[in-house]
Image (tube, rainbow, N blue to C red):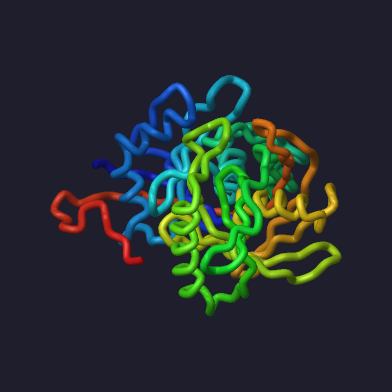
Length: 322
């Protein structure tokens, strides 16, 4: 394997490693097809970039690919410690920031409209550029909907909603010191929910299973403020407020009437970073009432890398300690 180049960003504290050279990209006629191809042919690249000693158990990244058609500016296949996700809000924010920083998409002062094809669908985004710098990116997600409410499991009452991926939501204390307990609880809840019922998108069977468990707590009402930590993939901890998870939370808050449409949710993370989000419309998914959501945050470049694999390295493409 030759040297692989990346540009790294963080969005609200969550890393995002963008593959920029040294390997071919995933092939296929659609983004979901390219996602399958990445698993079949390029998983050694994912492992090299995510696993230790070049990455860590909480690393996240992507392959940049051609969009599904001419209506989008970019396509993307996301990856993490356990494989390939269907949605990634923090990654979308970082990817659009990178595309404008690098001139992959033309940049101008003010608002820049960028369309991204992701495995869960097509996302419209709007990046705010001030004095030549991308200050924030807002994305309009695929329709979000409630899958189940008040499911009684070992941890108590659990809600499940879709925001590009399926997330379980549980009210719990969110503090850094609670993370070891919440990681194990998140893993347990995923197993329990999937044993209880198959969780599958009604229109796209590849969008399935519980991707993450969101532990949340209330922190204020005007505007509505909540703090969360999302445990996703194989015990991976989202340092950001989780973009697609925020959309899932908005679907639940809209259903309960706690967040009037158009009002802002201030969604805070376990490291005290923040996304701003709101419900901006309604939709329907196979007869299920759904909402259109927008989530906004900021990404910052952290480095550029050239990764290599020594043919004599006994650790090969790496390992995970989790």
